[in-house]
Amino acid sequence: MTKIELDLSDNVISTIKKVKETVDADIEVLIPEGSVILENSINIKLLNKQAEKYGKNLRIVTFDEAGQNLLSMLNDEVGRDRYSEVAPEERELMHERKMAPKRKLPKPDLDFIGGVNLPRISVPRINFGMGGLGKSKTAVGGGILLIATVLFVLFNFSRSVKADVNIIVHSQPLARSIQIRVDKNGLTKAPEKTLRGLAVIATENGTLTTPTTGEKLEGKRAKGKAKIYNFTDAEIELNKGDILIAKIDGKDYNYSLDDDVTVAAGTPGTNAEGEPIINSSEAEVNIVAADIGTIYNIESGSDLEVKGYKRLQVTAKTSTNITGGESKIIKTVTQADRDKLSKELTKTVTEAAQKALEGKSTNSVKVIQGTASAGETQEVFNHNLNDEADTLELMTTVTMNALAYNTVDLDKLVEDLLKDFVPENFVLSSKEKEVNTEVLGNSETTVLNSDQADLQVTIKTFVVPDISEDDIKEMLKGKDSKEAEEILGGVKNIRTYSLNLNTPLPIFRSIPTNTDNINVVIERE
Image (cartoon, rainbow, N blue to C red; front, side, top):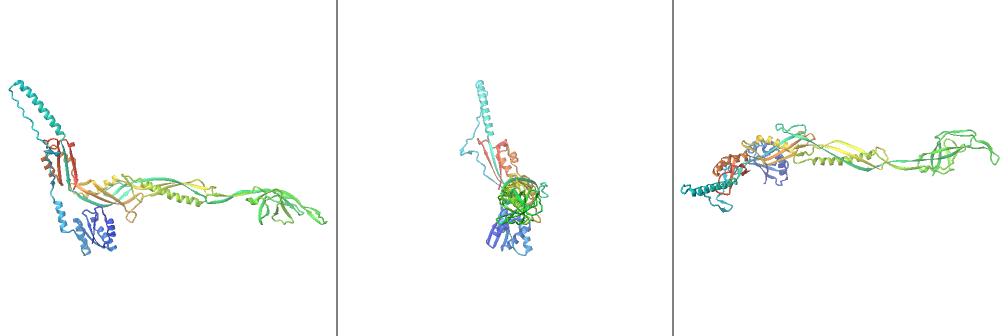
């Protein structure tokens, strides 16, 4: 069987973890006096239930009298001896320790200081007889001077006397686990177990650039002149925008008339064989390519078709070079570019803001993990959608909010919550106190956000007798060493004490009247 000895700081959660990690299936758990686990039976039942889940056979032992009663009650409920009381011999040792009488440490030998035997000082006796008046005056004057000198020396020696008092008092461990709620809009109140919350804000910004992915074709249309030839005996009118077609590399490319034009009817005539023909008439007109690109740049004399007419009726040729056509691909801003930048940069800046919030924790202010929430987010792009640009830049500013508390407020709340557990004539130790907080998270019964958060606070400390160092000094000042020891021996709840006089002469065996020369140290056992 493996034995697990718990500390006062162990709660039911840490104990379950220890049981789970133990290899042995048979385990004895020793719970110390004052443990938070013994506050109610739910903790014991939960510990037992989880042990069965892990296949562990658990046996629980405690020295705590209230805990033993609790275990006995649970044994009656389950009908078996799962929970054990402390062994009788161990109980006797505990009783003897509590009932042990006060003992005092050996008092120092004032005749032996610093390893050197000091002689007793005796003041010479002076005879004030009246025989020999002249001589007696001189003797009296010398005697008075000697007495004054001795008294002056003794006075200064007495001022250098110091007393060291070391007191060891009875102490009792005190451990409790309490659930509290931190509320940004609330106040610190022990009855409600609420702690005043603090709003913490962090603002971070960042900049990110990405290449644009949009494309569009941009350029100029070719321009020039063309002649229209009319082979009919009727006048032909063409309007601005009518189409002329050129065959380039086997493909049709359109040009449009840039002006209205009228071509006169052809004139009758004969050919070389004497056959009748119609001599064409012509008219020149400005034309422009239907689209951008260098493909529309063609030479003078290139054949063109007039859309809507047969070649035997109407035809056309370029009368000048058609030039000026050009094209290029332009990079543009797309919505995908904006979305990509926004997602990546917001994530980076948000993480930086969260880290900045964590950095706001100090010795006096603690930021609660898990309470960070996004506040305002601002985005500024350097280009609009569909703008011509090779790159797109975004500047993002993120504000994060979190909940924190003041450690001084927490200490005050803990003291108020523990008052009911402090025995009469005892106080909480101010020198040894551990306060640990655990965030409970979001559940059906707990909350965790930037306005409220539930914490499990575990306190481990000691209660010591309500004895003040200043009160001890006042009681001892001016008392002789024997009387001082009687006073110390009569102070309630003192286990042992020592009294040492640091004096240059053994004749000074009293505690100094000046409390600044009394050093009192109170320590717990």
